[in-house]
Length: 140
Image (tube, rainbow, N blue to C red; front, side, top):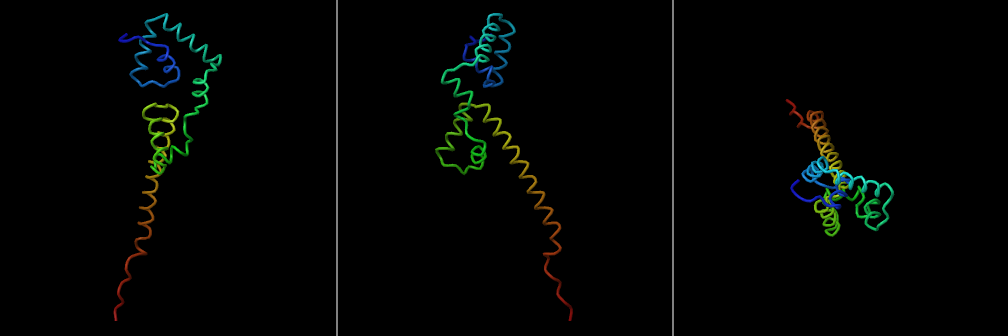
């Protein structure tokens, strides 16, 4: 184990809020430490019992998360600068797993839609190209 695993890190692990490297480090530490596993069990018990701190309620109800529609507008870059900055902070700095998942889903949908639009335009062009050609000059 390269560093001390704190209670906050274990909470982040339970909430799936850590990056892959931190998650792997905690899992490795859990394999080798009975006391760390017991601490994790205690945290899970507290969580299941329902922690009632302001922070826990805030996280549980995702009060800092923005609606999915706003995430879509964020992707399009059409929000006010303040809202755009907040969402960027929430997603990139805080790393909210819930909003990151929604954002990834919206990006996938946007890419799929872009591909469908291109196919549709190509099909329209191909089927109407003959109709749009300049009429042949009549022979006299």
